[in-house]
Each structure stands twice: as structure tokens, then as C-alpha cells.
Amino acid sequence: MEDVKLHSIGISIFGSRVIWALKLKGVDYEYIEEDLQNKSESLLKYNPVYMKVPVLVHGGKPISESMIIVEYIDETWPDKYLILPKDPYERSVARFWAKFAGDMEPFLTRYYCTRGEEQAKVMKDILGMLRSVEEHGLGDGRKFFGGEILGFADLAFARLILLFKGMRDITGLTSPLEVEEFPRLQEWMERFSEVPVIKENQPNYDEWLAYAKREMENLFPSPSA
Image 1 (cartoon, helix red, strand yellow):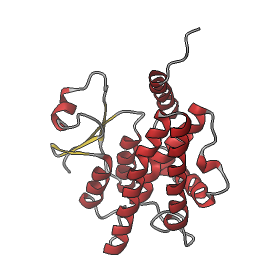
Image 2 (spheres, helix red, strand yellow):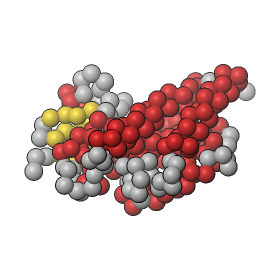
Image 3 (spheres, one colour):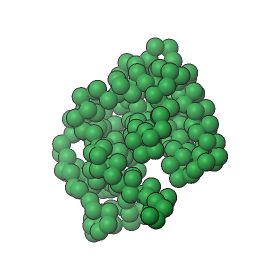
Image 4 (cartoon, helix red, strand yellow):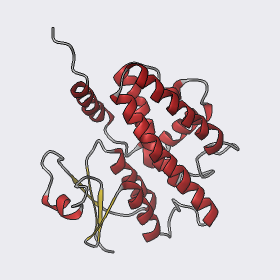
């Protein structure tokens, strides 16, 4: 089999998505930890457009963007654990919810980067999107977005778990996922986090939290004593 290498960093949930996909497929790979303050020549070579992680290199050919990489892994190693369903309709539904997860992320970023009335407005938008997920994405007694097993859309929504957890730990405010309005999302989050491949290969939350707090401090410096 051709060499498989993953360039990423330990706090990246995007990199974790790729690791989870590789683990689900049973693909052996070499992990290369990058320093984003001093990017390696390999990273700049393999991702000259965005110059960011993760990058999967398979047989010398680079693939960038985490969900594109996940789909590549699923198609390249189709014999074990289907991440995307075979049925064209079910596959389109999985891609729809994965895109919805991606569409939500800028709102969460804006929540962290605003204050006062603007932040309250952003939260209103977030709650509206969460209601759509609760009702339509996880209805009909589904354990995961695609049914009984973890799949493509679940990996896409994983970053939201991290961002909502950070919302509580950084701002001290209650995460929307901790209120009674979203029982299906709460159950999904717990179920997802207990899948062995997920549980054993989580990004380092403490390091991510420290990084996020530094970024917040840069945006909103504490008043001088």
C-alpha cells in the first residue's frame, strides 16, 4: 500500500476528523505534527494555497480540507466501514447536514468575537439553527445523523461540540446544548463522544482551551490595573 501521511496539530478538530476516518477504516498512517508558527517546507509544498492543516498525503499526492479528506478516505478504502452511505439519496442527505454544520461554524466564531447586542443576535441565529438540527437532523429516533452508526455528518458536527464546550469554559455562559430544549442533540453529543475511535483520539482540549483564551484576550484585552 502507498504511504499515507497526515500533517496536522494536536489541537485541531479538523485534523481529528481525518484521524477518526483513518481509524474507522483501519488505515495505517504516519502522523506529522506541524508548528503553525514555523510551517514546514512539506506543509507549504503540499498546501501552497491555504498553507494550513490538515493535509493528507497519499502516495505523494496531497489532499486538503478535512471533510474533503474524509470523503477521499471513504472512497479510497471502500471495503471497511462506510462513512458515506451507498444509497445516493442517503449520501446526499449526509452531505446536506455536513454542509449545514459548516454553515453554522461562522456564527459560532462571530459569537466569540462579539459582545453585547450583537452577540445576543448571533446567539438567536445559532439557536434557530440548532432547532433545525434537533427537529430534522436527529428526528425519527436516529442515534446518529445517518441512522444507527456514526457517519459523515457526525464527523462534520464534531467541531461544534468543541466550540460549545469552549463557550461555557471561556465565557462562563451556559452552552445552548446544556438546556432542555435540545435533548436529541445532548444525547447525540454523549453518544458520539463515547464511540471508542472518537473517545481515544480526541484533540487536546486543555491545549485548545488555552489557545482559544489567548485569542480571546487578543480580541478583548483586560483593562489595565
